[in-house]
Image (cartoon, rainbow, N blue to C red; front, side):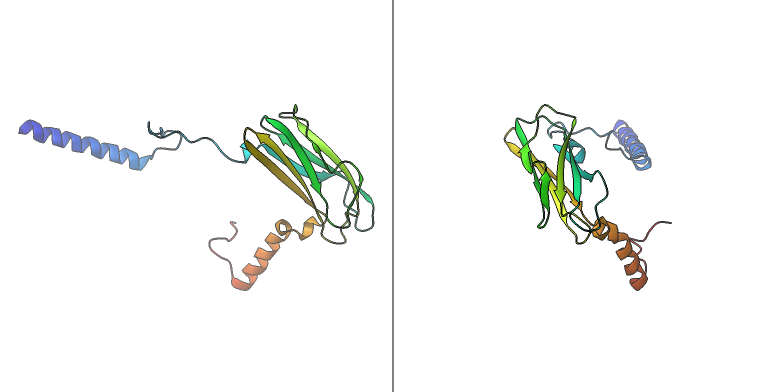
Length: 184
């Protein structure tokens, strides 16, 4: 009987010490091990995307008129393609191609290199908001994957540019929100 009582007290003491240690410093994600029966999680996120794209201009976008604008689409292919990739530019009404190809195949031997796609257009100016997009797609195994990028003729009128101003007006009218107020 005494052995059983002593064993119970010792187990209680050990569990108490382990509980205090856990409360003081809970295990982090890196220190946890996956259960034996469950597969470990695979990393995911934008850094593993098949394509990374951006569109830039070589010069500033003209205020008005039909001046020629040089667009450069930069495409990085981050994974090997099992079938060739393709790209396609989408132009709004009133914008015309001066030089360059709207659709074509991507070179497949440029893994981890940046591919530059040049397009010269006219009618892309700041008179009205116009959006030009670049879509890229490719096949890896049985899956067709893609990506896209966008450039605006009036970036100052996009939601990203006006969001801070909209928030400031809302705070002036309603008062600062504790959840979304700016940290000083």
